[in-house]
Image (cartoon, rainbow, N blue to C red; front, side, top):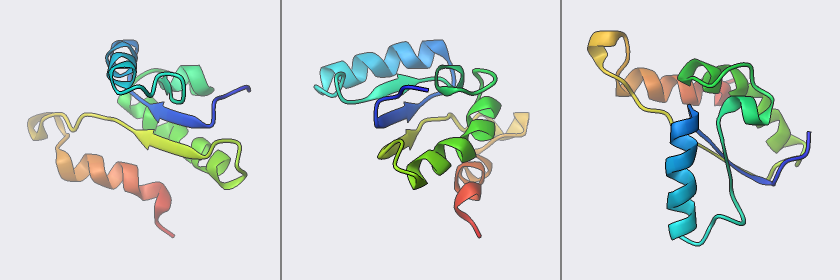
Length: 97
């Protein structure tokens, strides 16, 4: 799979559109690939898709296929089983030994 070496992983197509414009405004558009999971080999474009595909991308960091990885997910409402602490734990989980 051909990739740029700087990935900003987002949940959805609408997030990609928004963050592509942010990167363009910041002058990063030629250096950063803004992509939902399906664009980088994941199964589906959702927050769960981000979490499921994150270990694959972390492995690509390890073998230098990519050199930088950033992840943007929303934390949703605690009323809907979400919340900041749960979102942080899900992103940090692949880093725990």
